[in-house]
Image (cartoon, rainbow, N blue to C red; front, side, top):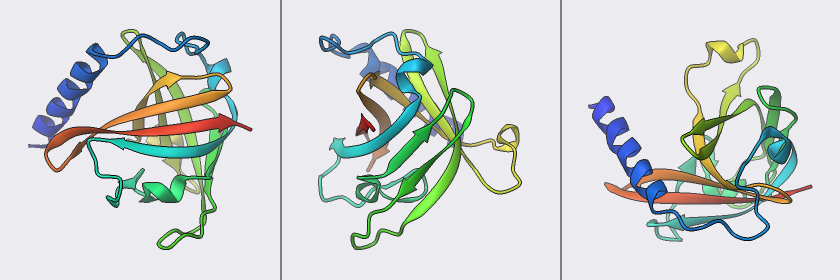
Length: 163
């Protein structure tokens, strides 16, 4: 059953990517680690196909809205980095999480992936992580995570600004 869900998610991703619009002027579409590495602030999260007032947990960490204002340190591709949640809004708890991040290509699409690292654990021993399409990178970066919400294809769009 899990493989069927993953296959359905993959097909939904392919369908959505196949209908993507032309890139915006001034946006890097050939995204490389130089466009991504650095320090970032997550400035906004919006949903497609999910009600704005929905409580959506992301990255197995917290409500998506708790990530607004979070600091992301991405020092180099395949290098250890971190994100820090600092929101004190209702239901949000400050936390710093070490991660290792990568960029991969899936056809013409650049994917940003990361795994959580815990004390004493090597990245190669972590088997699960998170994968999102990068739709732009430069002074701003946008991630698109295609998800299943109440049995329908949806997306979470993360907007980040370089610090």
